[in-house]
Image 1 (cartoon, rainbow, N blue to C red):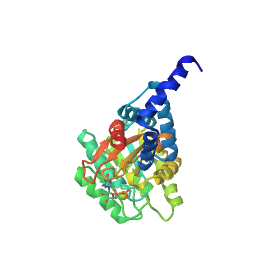
Image 2: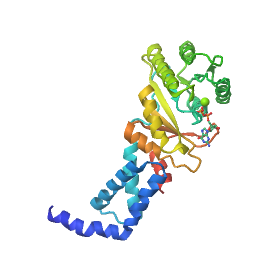
Image 3: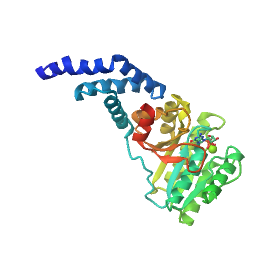
Image 4: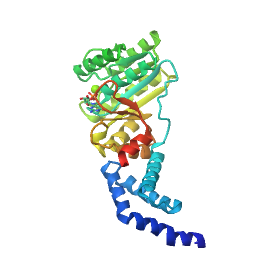
Length: 290
Ligand SMILES: Nc1nc2c(ncn2[C@@H]2O[C@H](COP(=O)(O)OP(=O)(O)O)[C@@H](O)[C@H]2O)c(=O)[nH]1
Ligand SMILES: [Mg+2]
């Protein structure tokens, strides 16, 4: 160890640890765990933070929190956070377990894209319950965009096929397809999603595609398991993190981004049509760690 780093170790690091206290770091780590980032990522981030504090001789709580935000921001920055809608049509498949907010997010997204001047078509790929297509249709009306749907129990692949045909015939810019979050069993659901993904690849081979996984911020650590499974089955290009308007901090997306290299693209902040926003890592982290 060189003289200078010895000097730093002897003086600068202890100085900041003394100023902030060992508990300060423990508390940060605990807050990360409470925010659902998971124990492993929390430990990794705080370890990295300690090195950064030492290296950059950070002294105040504000500086250290800023450093932690920049570390977590790097974990989150794993790809393009915007939708790839570069072809006409582009196809967005929205997936996730039951009740996370898929249908609601699709309604909000349709509204957002329509406001941007896009021609949007919705596709009612959740045929498991009759109410699912009705719910999507209500959102289609609210957002004032067309919808393709069939009867309850129809083959979701056939609805998707229809949707893609209609989109081409009607010069749509974006097709957003809903999916079921629950079937008779999980394997069933995964098979169906894999089949839908294949249909898009086959019927719209050159289309820009998004496969967005909806994660409910209140689900906690389970979100990581969901993300692993859906990624394996259907591939993922992005995350929509819903229900951030509640008390949940949604830190699970940091673990998902870090492990699976999938960026967060939107956050849901309520049940209204305007309550979907493009993901802003800085803002998210400020809300998460103050
Ligand atoms: N507070 C809040 N509620 C939401 C949000 N997104 C969806 N919801 C609610 O969550 C419930 C399930 O949503 P839904 O879209 O039907 O979920 P799906 O089963 O995944 O399609 C509904 O009551 C929605 O209003 C959100 O961002 N914030
Ligand atoms: Mg639904």
